[in-house]
Structure formats: C-alpha cells, structure tokens
Amino acid sequence: MRRSLFFLILCGIVISMVCFNTGCTQKKPEAVDTLVVADTMAVDTVETDTLAQIVEATPMPKAADELFDDFFFNFINSKKLQRARVKFPLPVRENGANSVVQRGQWQMEKFFRDQEYYTLIFDNEKQMKVVKDTSIAHVTVEKIFLQQGSVEQFVFNRENGQWLLTEKNTVGLGESKNASFLKFLQGFFAQPTANNVKDPLPYYGPDPENEDDSKYVNIHIPADTWSDYVPEIPGNMVYNILYGQEYGEGNEKIFLFKGLSNGLQTQLRFKKSGDEWTLVKLEL
Image (tube, rainbow, N blue to C red; front, top):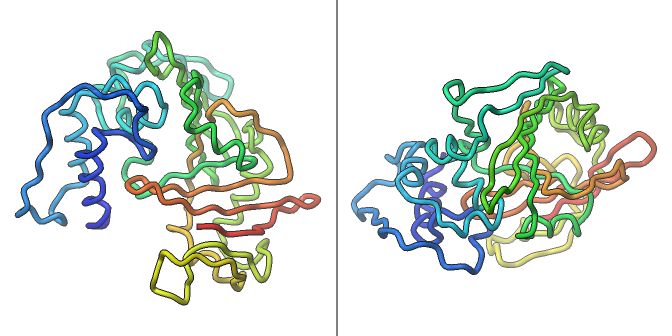
C-alpha cells in the first residue's frame, strides 16, 4: 500500500478509535490508551498488517455496533473479534449443498482489507443514504467473482445489540440481486475500452486541467479516458454490501469506489437501454 495510505490510516486510528469511513455514532466510545506513533518512524517501513495489529490490541468501542461500517472495519482487522462475532457452527450453503463451519475450522476472512478501496452497487442516490442508518439489523456482504460467475454472500444480523455473522452462501451471478448488471461488468472491466461508454462522457469532479483539487467542474471527457479517473480497474473480484435496501432490475445503477482510509468516492453511473448497459456519467 502507498505511504500516504498508511499515514492516513494510522492517523484515522488515533482520531476515530478504529471507526470506519463514516466514523462512529454520536455516542462516546469507551476510553482507551492513546496510540502514539514515534515521529522518527519511517512510514514506508510499516508492514501491511500494522493496522490489524493496532485494532487487535484496541478494544472495539460499544458504539461501533451502532453502525455496520464501524463494526465491519473492526471485524476485518481483528482476528480475535472476528472469532467472537461468528455464530458457530456457521451454516454454509454452496451449490444447493448445506454444511457447517465449526469454530476450529474458521479461517480469518480479510475481505477488502489489503486494498485501498472497496466497491458498492446502488440503484439510486436515495439508496446510498441507508449506509448511515443505525436502525439496520440485517446486512449482506458480497464477494463477487466476475470471471467465475459466482457470489459469496456473508450474512450479518444484529442480535442483542451486537453484529454477528450468521450464515454464508455461495450463489451464481444469476441469483444475485444485480444479476444483469454483474454479467455486464464481467466484460466491461475485463476489456476497459470506450465500448458501452457515452461519448463524450459527462464528468463532475476536480478540474483535470488544474492542479487545484478544490475546484470542481462539470465538463465532458473523451470516452476512452474514463478509466484514468478511477482508483483502478477491478480484476476478477468486486465487493458489494447490501444494507437491507430493496434492489430491482431497474435501468440505472451506481457503481461506487470508496477509499478505505479517506472515504473519497468515485461514482460510475450506468443506464440500461434494451439489453445494453452504458456508462453515462463519472463523478468524483
């Protein structure tokens, strides 16, 4: 990971006490010892697992269970917490076959911990607001394997005020809530060209002709440059988190990249006409 990413992550740990991108709720977290990083430490010598070590050694504030993102940040970074929050024996369903995973069989699931961003899929902007809804009690985290055409679904429920992983399912793309869109993404990300991209493409974000990132513009960019504006082109795997929102096979989708350390967002807006999906706007 880049030096700046580690610096931001470590600062975020000190300031937010291991909360996720949105921060914990207004409740005050339990007091814990202040983390001090020596000024003489070379940031680029920090190992990838340093963040996990910090989280592992820091009790998760009770307030983190109020917001799923806050809990999930701790869940993917703490082996101890993860084992405590998996409801064993964990029911597993794959290709119609049912089984269970016992506590001693569990392997830590890091999800998107080792990359700089994660991805989300929404039908519209209204759905995006559900991320901050503290009344949610059921969430599904999806690991989507585009080329294999399968989706691993990790189902979380809040029981007695605590988030727990209660089951894991593996389904085909066709069984997903975003079936047609995911099948489109198989080819779209595999060959990131100007195909299926509106030309010129509407763009809203920092002025690409100006080094001042605070100046935002509404312009059009050449279709074949769209990939220059995203963190990276996803390979085989993308992620999605279903926060209880109702999905439909509608004609619009928002594919969102969200930075793990800074919460910065990149939105790809798609529309479907007939059987074809098209990227119609890019927004930073």
